[in-house]
Image (cartoon, rainbow, N blue to C red; front, side, top):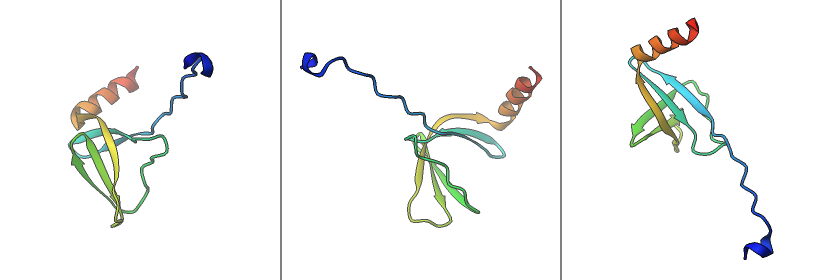
Length: 88
């Protein structure tokens, strides 16, 4: 079968958007599940944290948009790392 199809070409890698959400106590680094999944802009964002994902609902919409949580960090630790990066 491979001789009929010729050499296989790897599929182009799609990059998913990544966002950093800051709260008073925790920082979340989240990513879309596909390359066209973007964080919606709105006056009010409601979100809930589930098993390894963050679900976002915009302005009382019927559907949620789910993002994968890539990293979580305590806000004070994140601030310290950011200061260190800025100093370099």
